[in-house]
Image 1: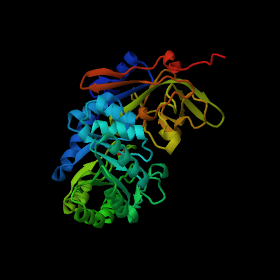
Image 2: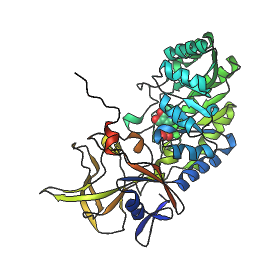
Image 3: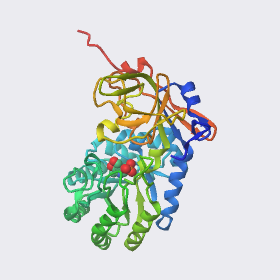
Image 4: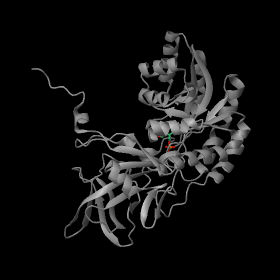
Length: 416
Ligand SMILES: Cc1ncc(COP(=O)(O)O)c(C=O)c1O
């Protein structure tokens, strides 16, 4: 995480001391590096330059306006999976004609909203969804552009909850049935078949699943090109991994580009991709303050002020997040780092050698830019955290910390 480095024993976010940000904005606190967001985007863009893909940032990874607009300024589109994400993307300045809309359960109102906005295409996940988009487009007197999400049955070798391109997953249409689905789409009114989409899962650390999937969809793409004059585009999804552990190798963009560019060029289609984690995962950290250090006969617990409701990945996916002290120390402590929520699943590290920490110390939970704040909840009636963005020596609040009143906003007690 090259934007979060120590200087004279103090952890910095770009040019600002993390302790200064914690003082100023309070803890727990999400901090993002704008420089990292930009450099990840630019690295991907230049690695893939030969096929000049439209990079549609997967808004679900982190949906803050400041993050979406950082990518929009660089020319990014957006991959959205709900009316809410579409709203956020438009509000953050993403052009409608660069927005793609995936998800297995799009409602009529979401489809109508997207049609009215004029999005680039719907990533369609089933035959009934094709019928619904056709009906909505007909009702509005417009045309819905369509990519069918093909499930190529490729194992991305990741957690079963984040594997999406295997035959038992709920996503997309099986490869064997895909051509028929396009034929159905062609018979329905008010649809234009432009694209094929696939997304295999996340995080994927090698290019092999992408190569395998491209080989599997090649024949279908060529048949679609021959059959439908409007078919012109392929979306290879997201899923590109990041290093979560100091010992992990970073995702090898060069090897990825070398593996996917030749088969993409052979297809002769325009290209898009939908990375989320790769762009934001290592751009963010969660800073938390130690409240207590507690010992029982079996274990030591470092109890911090952040919790599973702020970052659920360890509880949900047994995900590893590296934990670093904000003031450098080499002294270790073996134990758990846990939050205050009333669940045994509320932990950031278990039986791990972590930096020795005492009450009042600050810890940084690393790689907390993707699927972190975006998955936060108010569980245990905990207000959502503040988010700050840093650029060089500048820093600015990009989301206010919720107040207690925010917890009950919109609630009603029955009058009887
Ligand atoms: C359809 C689709 N595209 C893109 C992504 C982004 O994945 P990642 O953040 O791993 O790049 C996801 C993640 O769930 C997805 O479902």
